[in-house]
Each structure stands twice: as C-alpha cells, then as structure tokens.
Length: 202
Image 1 (cartoon, one colour):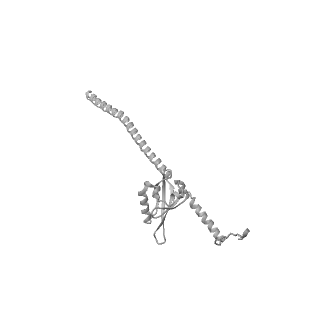
Image 2 (cartoon, helix red, strand yellow; image 1 turned 60 degrees about the vertical axis):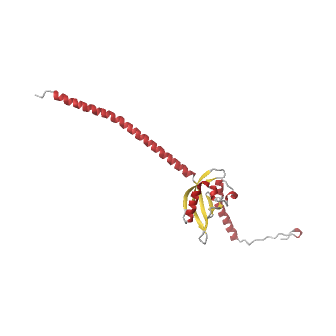
Image 3 (cartoon, one colour; image 1 turned 45 degrees about the vertical axis):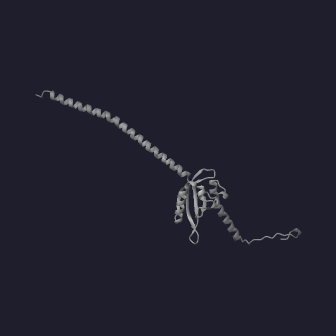
C-alpha cells in the first residue's frame, strides 16, 4: 500500500476464510474453558515437570505462570514425595488414579488438601506423553470426616454413660429386692418354727 511521500506498508499473512475464523473462535473458547474451569487442571511430564496448568490451579496455589510452569511438581508438595512417586508408578503402569489426597504448599506457605484424578496421554509410539490431572479441594471431605469421627466419639461416650446409669439403677433396684427376699425367707422360717410349737389339732 503506497502512502504519502512514497513510503508504503506491506501486510503479509495467509488468507483466512470464514470457516477458519469460526474455527479460531471455537479454539479460543475452548482455551478459555480450560483456563478458567471451576476445577484445577495440569499436565506433568514423565519426570514430574509441570508442562501446563490452568489459571484456576495457579490462583488456588498463589503462583504466577513463570513461578509454576516448568518446575518439578515435587517442589510444591515437598511433604508428599513418597506418595507422588507411587502415583507416577501407578500411572506408568497404565492405571488411572481417582480421589487420591495430596497436600500442596501454596506460595505463602499454607498447606492445601487436594484430591487428584489422573490418567496418562501416551505418544503415538506408546511412550509416556504427559499426565492429565484434575484437582479438587479436599477441605470439605476432611471436615465431614472430622465431624463424623467426633460424632462417633460422642456416641461411644453417651453409650458408656447409659451403661453406667443402667448398671447403677439395676443395683439400686436389686438391693431392696434382695433385702425383701431375705426378710420373707426369715419370716417363712419363723412361721415354720411357730407352727411346730402349736399343739396338734384335736
């Protein structure tokens, strides 16, 4: 395109059809869906390097893309090394993991309990490509379990109190009954003695 003064601007690019435009819009929508999904997502290499993570996961943990992508996942769950290695062993064997609790450490040092579901995307040659991890907050489940445990403890305590109450109550009931039985036995013995002293009927 020629401009004033004889200078021009050359625009280069590939022709873009209406179908291409629609496909790019769909691709952008799909990227937005994964980036802003209500669940955390990430991919790990076969050596545990974070290849990609969505914005949701980085927001949960408080890291920027530069701080998180390309780092070993072990860096963010240092207390779970044995568990993470076991997860990779399971995934490497072609298995799927579901609802595995893992503790992650946020940027400010807080421990966040998370649940992980994962499987593996394999390369065309059958080699390990990357994991596909779906991560959910595990706080609610832990609170429910803690409440259930507390309820169980309270039920056991209540049953113990009830057992003690019933035992004491039966003790107080049995004692007068035993005394009464002894008195009746003694009265019966005295009556027999008195009957023996009476003259025989004429």
